[in-house]
Amino acid sequence: MIKKTILLENKATLTTKNRQLVIKSETRESFIPIEDIGFIVIDHAEIYLSITAMNLIVENNSSVIICNTNHLPNGMFLNLNSHHIQQEIFKNQINASVPLKKQLWQQTIIEKITNQGILLEKITGKKNSFDFLCSKVLSGDSTNMEGVAAAQYWKNLPLTPSGRGGIKRERFGDYPNSFLNYGYAILRAATARALSGSGLLNTLGIHHKSKYNAFALADDIMEPFRPIVDEKVFELMQTYDEQELNTVLKSELLQILTRTVYFKEEKSPLMVALQKTASSLQQCYTGGRKKIKYPKLWN
Image 1 (tube, helix red, strand yellow):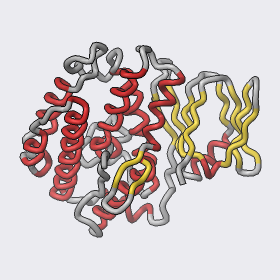
Image 2 (cartoon, helix red, strand yellow):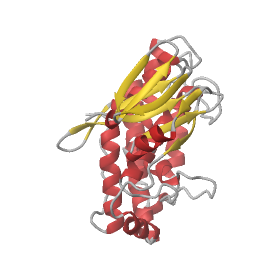
Image 3 (cartoon, one colour):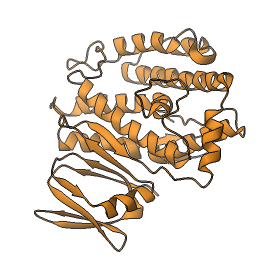
Image 4 (cartoon, one colour):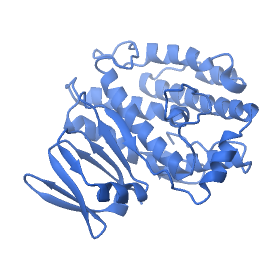
């Protein structure tokens, strides 16, 4: 079942009654079953969330995402006890060998570059050399093909307001970077939720290792999915003239969580696919699999 994503941008009180989330604003009162909720995005300084409601939401492995004064996702609450063999999974993850982590990162970067190449050709209608770059990705991506591909990708992806040429990708940049950053933050939260649900420790990454990063593993696993956000931002730029994020554009970006992706014998909404990918990673750590199960983003 596809979980609901709730965006809250006005003053409200969130409580519970009969295992339903009660959202009470100045004009209305809504009731939503806790089990139907995947994400709650809180983007207003005067939203009250009761401890009882928060506990029920987290116990259901739903995520609460908090936005900052710039209206960008800034933090989230996750279930820390979401798997019945949590400690065993943590041990396997912590004890993972360097060669295993290098192989997993190689797989991840090949998937990312592949998806970048497909999207670039899809949008521009021109052939590119991204398949060749994939063939050059070594264990641990020791030759940094990720960086080589990124330089070509952003140079040629037409995300400028004029629709010509590429953009300078900046973490805190202006339009359309602000749109990309919002989408990536939502994708990061969804990935972290899926990993937590599979009993994995988000802090312990495969490749990302910053001591200040509490979601290093989510940053690793979300990499091949980033082109989903890039495609959505490109579509929004063709449809809307606004260069500032508003409720409509945020709602559009949140829809990436229900976008269809494709496994070999089935298709799945992104938020469900992330759970399958996270589960496969857990099996890689336990020795049950050799490859992470990443979906195709386009059929």
